[in-house]
Amino acid sequence: MDLMQLEQLDRSWTLAINSLHSSFTDPIMWFFSDKKVWIPFYVALVALMFWKLGWKKALVLLAAVALTVLCCDQFANLIKHWVQRVRPVNDPLMIEQGLHVLEWGGGFSFFSAHAANAFGVACCTSTVFRKHCKVPAGKNLETGRKLWGNCYTWGMMVWAIMVSISRIFVGRHFLGDVAVGIVIGIIFGLVFGFIANLVIRKFIK
Image: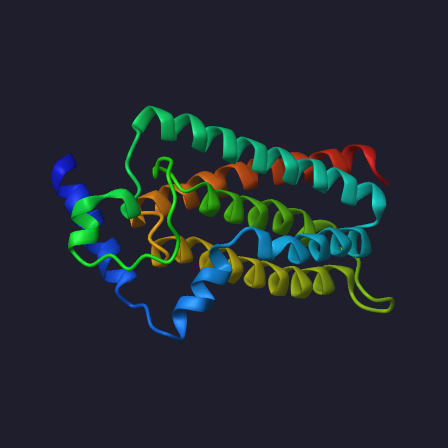
């Protein structure tokens, strides 16, 4: 499959996913796509870090998350200006073929920083929570951490998936942009999560 065929397949799948909109799904997807509405979620996530990890480990994780987001954002900006792929909302052919638009905007499309950041945060925090979260007194430490860590990880993954898919639904990204963003986010998240775990094991009792 050559590059032109791959791009055509990407366009077709993007239109197929985007066409699943309805009066029920549109507000949900717009909600997941909007960064501003997630501010209370991020505040709650930071509070959860301090509650389940203690302040020292929470600060290490916060630094790891900040580095993850910084790397995802800067790498996305670098690639976007190098590739210069037009967003679906600004692509006349996509509009002509029936793209449903919920969010207009400029800039370039490849790859999705939203998807990278969401999966980066999810992977980075999950990596640390699964190893170091506190469990109630009297509970087996290993079993408690595994149970709580699994619940947290699945919840964060569902959130990250919804954020990523929403970018296709609102018309801001192609499926390929989102898929690459997910991979990049997972890589950065796991790397900085591993580093955070290493720092916590070495320097924090």
